[in-house]
Image: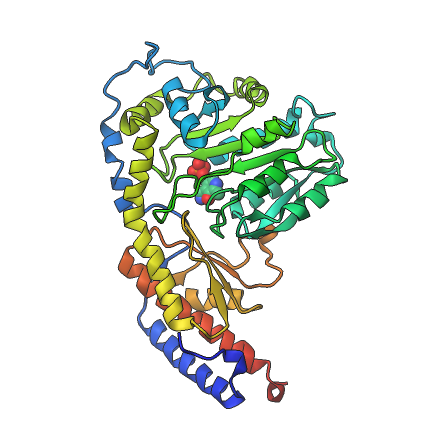
Length: 431
Ligand code: PMP
């Protein structure tokens, strides 16, 4: 932490630093580690918190008396929709509870828009010469790969501490009718941890758009995933949108993937009643009803909206120390050197690490060769291309605490080594 910025050191000092980091790296490689910080998965200790689900439900009937083992109930169990409506600050009538993946609901929504268009679309999106989405970066890689796979072009704007650069978004959408939508992870964004402010949300919901059927994919995957006692409240997208005359603009998504079981949770969609009717009309072509046994199981397990929040505090106890360990390792090894910045998120699943420009790919390779798997450099950008080659997403939830410490000390060594190589290599006598 007391170190001087590496770039400000005399040439010989930089070379000495490089030599020291090479030695440190050789020692790291000699440890023969196999550690993985690639994906935001819950650890098994977190999954254990929800094991009671494996013995639920205790009944086969929902509140209305319907047999949950049978077909039907496309919009999901009312009692579960009530819990999520309360948590997400929306009306029960606006909520659909679906299968185990919100990503699937996002994909379905996009496919319906492409094949059929929204109620107010001039034509199905597939019949437009080009369809584009605004993508805040860095962002969630699967959002970008989904768009690429469906042939939707991506235009980037910067993600900031209070959400996407709303003025940049507003300028893009104002006169380009081919821009049909945007992604946003409003709360504890993947990977920056940003929390979209009510002001930014209001701008996004009220801005004029050239496309009459513009959609905001409001992916609130981490709405309740607080890491501190200060629990951020998500911006109120649906109310803001209807107050500004665009009730059908936002489609909100959430799930219990990182609340109960990542592979066997419940996904949620919330949107205007008109959008919901449109969504279910198309959904009905593909399903006679969701897994209501799983819905009922979740209702019994949580009991109430407060039950969800209580449960999330138990997750926090397990994962907050891992995030603290990431910060501690980076601060100890890199503090003051001026070669990296990183987030100290107050929620969500990731730490966003920005290394010296032009060294992220090198850092990820060095880490790999020392047995530490990191998400590929650039993955938080469309087509995997980080224009500055500086962004690395760290996901510390899955490994144990001791492993996080070891892995992060190793990552810090790689960051410092790559920076020193770059600084020294760029010197005049190396030309
Ligand atoms: N959205 C975001 C922003 C995510 O980070 C993730 C999980 N990594 C998902 C969606 C996936 O959600 P689900 O499990 O509900 O499909």
